[in-house]
Image 1 (cartoon, helix red, strand yellow):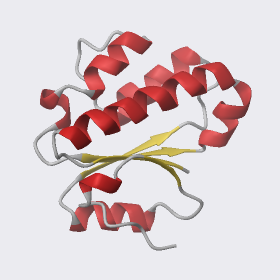
Image 2 (tube, one colour):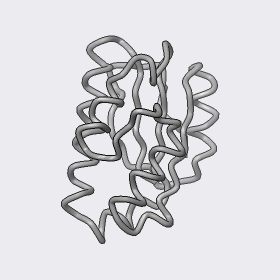
Image 3 (cartoon, helix red, strand yellow):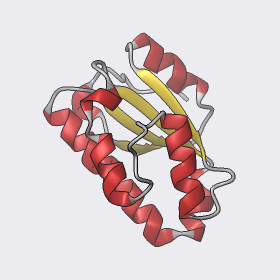
Image 4 (tube, helix red, strand yellow):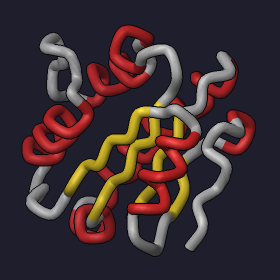
Length: 129
């Protein structure tokens, strides 16, 4: 499957991704964007979810492992950097099925971050693989 043009800020958002993550990694490199792969294989509860996000996204030390703290950090220029990011949530379906309410909150936070950065003309993509 071919990745979208990740430099197109207006199209950035939360998207399903059914294939290999390698096209996304390559497209992120071509667009000069950071690429983060969050493996949710072992995320069996909210604590493990936040730990996976923290580790894979290299969140700041002050990240509080709660929804409000995640919302704050996703809109933090110091964390994001200057060029934008592509976040891929690997094995997302199992967490979504087992924790639908938490998943909804997570997806909303990522969508809000995509909107926030789009308004500032910074690519912020989230792929659910």
